[in-house]
Amino acid sequence: MYNPLLNTFIAVADCGSFTRASELLFISPTAVMKQINSFENHIGVKLIERTPTGVYLTEAGEVIYHDAKFIIDYSNKSISSAKAISYANDTTFCVGTSLLNPAKPFMDIWYLVNNAFPKYKLHLVPFEDNHNGILSEIEKLGEKFDFLIGVCDSKQWLSRCRFLNLGRYKKMVAVSREHKLANKKIINVEDLYGETLMMVQHGDSDTNDAIRNDLENNHPKIHIEDTPQFYDLSVFNRCAETGNVLLTIECWKDVHPGLVSIPVNWNYSIPYGLLYSLNAPEDVLKFVETVKSTLNIQD
Image (cartoon, rainbow, N blue to C red):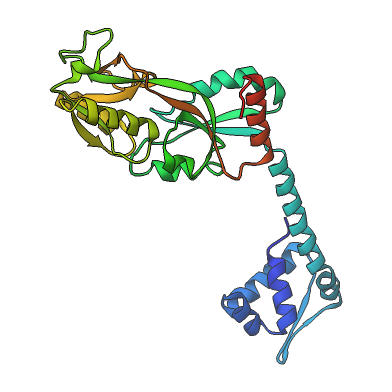
């Protein structure tokens, strides 16, 4: 907000020398002299007397010097106050969206509760479902975005964010459109005998672990192939290319155009909901409480 040449002027006045001021400012003595000349021309007043023994402030220079540090301090405080007000009045919720975690369910909720946030607008922030990088995206809740909404039964995810359970999605299977099971309306587990079922590794999801234990103990004719711990498009591509069967969920039925999703005659489902920061600000917490109240969600 103030002329930055004021900093050079103060340094010269404090040091009593262009050379010593240049060392303080990490620029050459010539650059210091040019900046002082420019500053004097800018305000139209001679501020410094140059003598063989050093430099001295003129009477006008004394006046500027007396007020300069106040001007700089006041300017810095003004900028800090402006930033604080801007932050306090920031009325934008940033919502993450990706292929596997689209913002559409959030929008459905938003239109139920947005009357409680009349000054707020939404900003959608895209991110990648990369199985190697998804945890770093979850850790950016509160920085890159305020909310994500999606399936969450991962211990690793839940250790990095808060989660408001909004419901459950049925566990299904997906196969290529040329697969022999593709035309079935519903399948029994026994229909998977002799097939290779792709699913995440053991240990991070209670729901997936329960399915795996059931299949390994009661249906050994199904071969299980481990996928990466978190799905991304490469997992769906492998299913389409190999003819394997993929364990999936009902909300992912349109992720890959070459696959069809089929319900299974079982009772397995997985929770989905609102993800937000462990250190969420007040407006985010208010939004969560409003959603809970509107949808009558009990803790």
